[in-house]
Image 1 (spheres, one colour):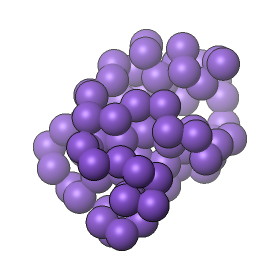
Image 2 (cartoon, rainbow, N blue to C red; image 1 turned 90 degrees about the horizontal axis):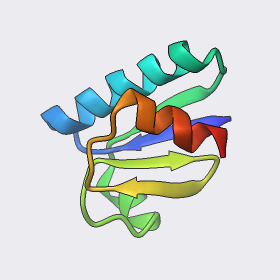
Image 3 (cartoon, rainbow, N blue to C red; image 1 turned 90 degrees about the vertical axis):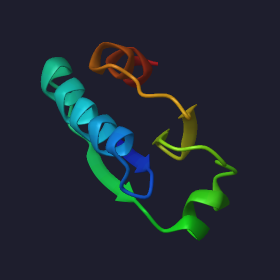
Length: 77
């Protein structure tokens, strides 16, 4: 599994990254976590509002700070 956090480094983006790591610890799953801060790469996903969350190449959240529980639910699908 590959998880990408889309954001330019704002507080919400950093919190989302922390929540993703917490979600992985909670679920016991392993994933490659990557922070994408380059605007051109973020826009390639069609994301206009950060933070964004991409799981295995699919945008699953835009402009929302997800809790670790919400992220676990998204990883399970």
